[in-house]
Amino acid sequence: MAPRFRSEAARLAVVGTVILLRHAKSAANGSGILAGRSAGVELDDSGRQQAQGLVERLSTVPLAAIVSSPMLRCEQTLQPLSKDRALDPVVEPDLAEVDYGSWTGKKLSDLVEEPLWRVVQAHPSAAAFPDGEGLANVQARAVAAVRKHDERVTASAGEHAVWLLCSHGDVLKSIIADALGQHLDAFQRIVVNPGSISVVRYTPLRPFLLRLNDDGDDLSGLAPPPEEKAAEGEAGDAARSSDAAVGGDPGA
Picture 1 (cartoon, rainbow, N blue to C red):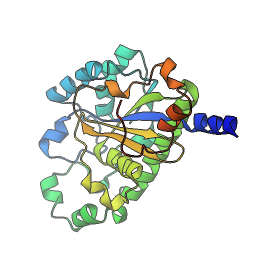
Picture 2: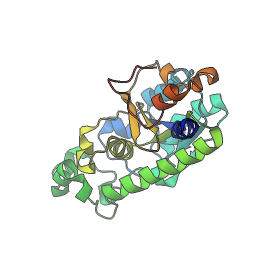
Picture 3: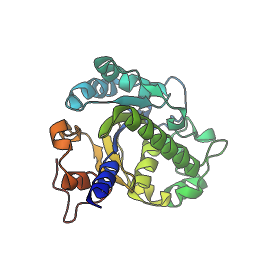
Picture 4: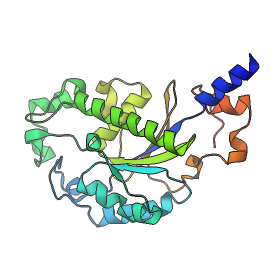
């Protein structure tokens, strides 16, 4: 029985960790415009600084892959990091910005007067943008894309693989809500700023949210454990399995 238990624990220990990066600050972010899928929305000066800063922020984290929304502002955010790591981002259409339809390009100060605004705030799972898509569909496509790429990266890079995904505010909030087991109607409680990092570790039983809206520099705790510590026996396997640590996680 014991060898079978150890084998099962080892299987459960194979997990993937995804860094959810919101694109750096764009010109639209600072103007109060809902950019949506508008073409040609670029980073502003502070956004370009944020993008360059990713190289140092993630210097201690070995990345197995980079996946990106097809929008230009995500491409520009990833350019310095991609060049530094010699990793070409995999473009994933299902991580694209929300299709806000006829809301696209309008001022938020004007949209707040729309009846749909209150639905988006209080009951987003029922919100569908005119000539666009519904937020429930956004969550479905985004979560499916994350799961697909996490399975792919973990299969190719092995256990404890860490990879990075760059997308947009509402898209990332919907992914985080799913990881927390929250109904989509609660996703407006989540804040994800431009250039911030949130981190989810996926396991066979449940995801774990490791960081949220983090704009700090110390990300060393996301690095996989050294190989000699990765095989610590049953206790070590259990600590990295789908089970939560009773009494609280001991930390990195």
